[in-house]
Image (cartoon, rainbow, N blue to C red):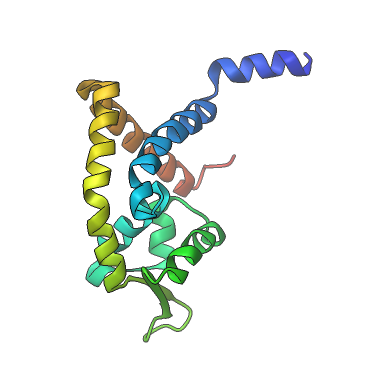
Length: 159
């Protein structure tokens, strides 16, 4: 088997390829809609995850788990938000090893301002896909995420 055979096999069956391609297409639509407020879809997703924590705060570990990101990638993604003043990162008062990410008042305002832009993009994507396929996609993605997370935690994973 040569490289071309391997490429054809992977192209025909690869879930990663399809998931990443779909994610990029959907992300582009959200990014376009959010451009007027100076945020990207990935940033709004992070702000949303932080906002839903107690007192709009999450530990880095919690946030990494929710977002399915490595801590180093999460840290890299949070830096521009911290520089923009939409989040603040501090150490936990009870455990100095734990870093906390908090949505600032500016962050709360920016997240609220993102909603109409997000709604427009979401409506356009849903209309493009169709209501039922969009719902089915949400369900399939949630199922895939939960199943893969469970498999990662399984003592038999990786064998």
